[in-house]
Image (cartoon, rainbow over all chains, first blue to last red):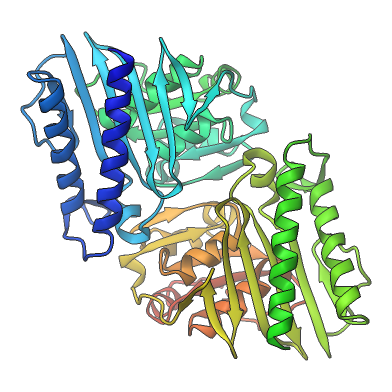
Amino acid sequence: MSLEMVEDIKEWIYEASALIKERLSSPLIVEQKTSAADVVTNVDKEVEAFFVQKIQQSYPNEKILGEEGISEPVEDFSGRVWVIDPIDGTLNFVKQQDHFCIMLAVYENGVGRLGFIYEVMRDELLWGGDSIGVYINERKITTVKKQSLADGIINVNTNMFVANSFGTKDIAEKALAVRMTGCAGIAFKEVILGKENGYLSCLQPWDYAPGKILAESLGLIVESLDGKALDLKAQSPVLVAGVETYEDIKNLVHH
Amino acid sequence: MSLEMVEDIKEWIYEASALIKERLSSPLIVEQKTSAADVVTNVDKEVEAFFVQKIQQSYPNEKILGEEGISEPVEDFSGRVWVIDPIDGTLNFVKQQDHFCIMLAVYENGVGRLGFIYEVMRDELLWGGDSIGVYINERKITTVKKQSLADGIINVNTNMFVANSFGTKDIAEKALAVRMTGCAGIAFKEVILGKENGYLSCLQPWDYAPGKILAESLGLIVESLDGKALDLKAQSPVLVAGVETYEDIKNLVHH
């Protein structure tokens, strides 16, 4: 991990963003995955392939875990692992041409080193890591506003809210207001920028990998609501919050 | 109503936006209205006073209905009535410094003539009316993408969703996905731009006045879910949708 790597990744992200914007002028090819709301497009695949190619050119023989599974499956997290979500919030991308992110994380021996969340249509890049700090575009973020659950806005996954999974609805109703955005990257960004005070959602590793690195670098808590350790091989019910909100939430989580 | 009036209003909105952004660098004075989530700030009041002054200077002796009630109460809607929401989404403004709108509408003898929804932090102005068409910044919108309830994203008010008021939850669960944004202006904008296919929320006249004018100018439907006519003197449970989604929703509304 070096500053050169950070610059490489930023350059790829801006290039991928230009590609995505160009593709928005043509009809998308949309395929269903597990349900009508869980979709993938030709652009998700093209952007993941773009990142895989860039990584393989500059950092050959390293492992790559991508949402669309274009590269070899990752069997273990020894060495360096790149985690890619080419378009996070694909349903928003398809229906809104807005409110989606490009996400990338770099892990070394299972430890998160660098995270990147780029909200494409707002040109906002949240990036950094434990050793370099966290930045929104060029501005360094040093602290996150502290607020209790009752004093802030909470972002939740709709299904978990409706089913009250792990007490999500009970928790959300203690907050000042509830938001649903359909994009993990945006929700992590809002919590990290102190605009929302918590996020609860069912996430795949590529949905939370960069956000976890960035959030933890600023002292926020990222945990699985099921009490298990977060594991880059499986989906988890993830909670992101500052310490104050986390303390309020902890007592309300149902197992 | 003239094109000169349209230009006046745009100029005021951009000036108000600059004022709001300037005020974001100082601490806000926040007061509760009906609950902890229903708030008003010194900036809401200052911006409403700014509009009232501008209107009185250029269009003296006309009626003004503002959220913060700075001008004389409006007893009836004869003649010209200006409807102002200086900051729509005040909780977002306070907690996020983002995701809020300036809204203004012009009515003549109870008929909506001009509507303006300005999403301040994205610099997006949705404006127009029946006689001039609808524009997003300088681009004219001629049609709204047609989609059924099951084929699009729906935006809902949290309380109505939780209580299933008028069947809001049943309706939302038939959509592809649910979003909660906490700002009527943004929700109207998303529906008018075809990015969401419906919006259900409990709204005051200043929350829906400009959106109704813009939506109806493009053939969308704006109605009260309680079966009554929308009335500029009272709060209503408002539905906004295209014809296809409206037909799907109509059968699911509970009274």
